[in-house]
Length: 82
Length: 199
Image (cartoon, rainbow over all chains, first blue to last red; front, side, top):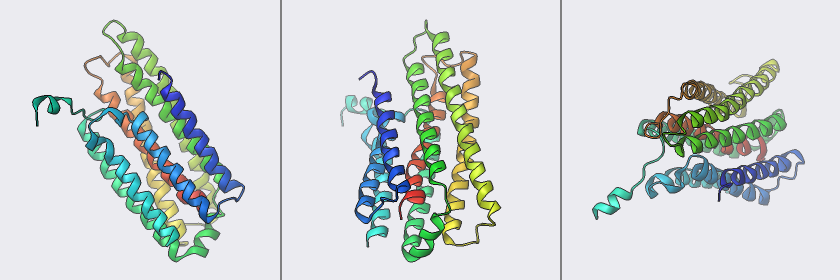
């Protein structure tokens, strides 16, 4: 538990490398966009919960950035797929 | 609702004012992101062709830099939150070190982004070139201004840590600056795949 910030940093960097490789190696496909958007959501939630420190605050405050992420990423997905 | 339950409600770190700013910024950028996504849908070919002119590697490096700077700031906050009256001087000094790293990252981000703008403008591209570049320039320049402001805020917080200005009872200023910086990171985390990767 002590190294939680370090763990979060590693996960964020790994997911960023994944996103970059998808673009750089031109592997991005319709189905992988969904995966990419999901990993973006995970990254945003990690920043909000652990870096911003919202994990331990009141539910309504914690979920404002999460709801923002959900709505924005869902609308991006709708624009992409529909 | 019982008194205990009310007392348990914890507020986000920092001043409430900074959170109002954060929510407004999230909403504003959110509208831009969605606007970009729907415009792209109507101009698919043009967006995909124009996107090829962007440098994905510098976008990736900037993402790496911002995430790492956010980690440095979070380390600083952790130290400041856990300080005791006895460890005040040491904690401020330690937090000051982490902030210095974060400020260096902020400056590196600005430098890389500035060279990207220099290249783009050198190609004769402006806001009116096409819809893709209108969104790209608006989003990234608006974000650039936030990183610039965030770096200045971190610098001010850093100056206060140098005089051991934060105490176990009063470190809201530190938390407010940190929260603003994390918001800048959060916005870039969505911006990077949306503008640089998805096609």
